[in-house]
Each structure stands twice: as structure tokens, then as C-alpha cells.
Amino acid sequence: MLMEDTNRTQHKWACVQFIAEVSLIANCKPSDLKLALSLIADLAHSENENQESGDVYYEAK
Image (cartoon, rainbow, N blue to C red; front, side):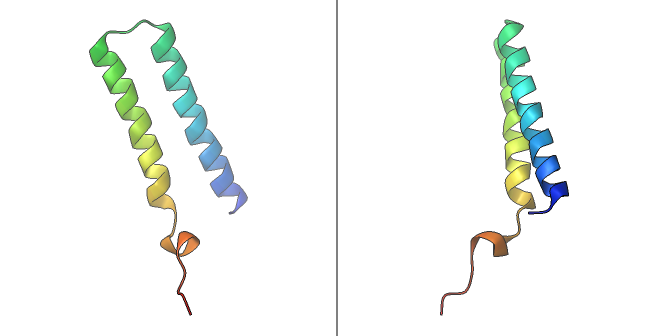
């Protein structure tokens, strides 16, 4: 993994942590909490999409 990838990953997880903490502290409405959880899910999903399939799978011989 390149340094750029590491920095991008750290930034995304910092965003996830920030969204989660603000959501909990703010005592937000259920609809706002659902939106926050949706943002977290989108960030997590986009992290998995960016990985190349070659990083996980390889040809069995």
C-alpha cells in the first residue's frame, strides 16, 4: 500500500469517527442519526471499492 493510500484511508476513518462522535454528542433526531450512519456506511463501502481485486485474490496453481 502506498503512502497516499494510507493517508486516504486514515482520513476516511477519521471522518467516520468524527461523524459517529458528533452524532452521539448532539442527541440528534432518529432521522439525523440514520443520515449519519448512512454517511459512515458510504465511506466504508467506498474504501472497499477502491481496493483492487488482485490485492485479495490470486490465481490458484
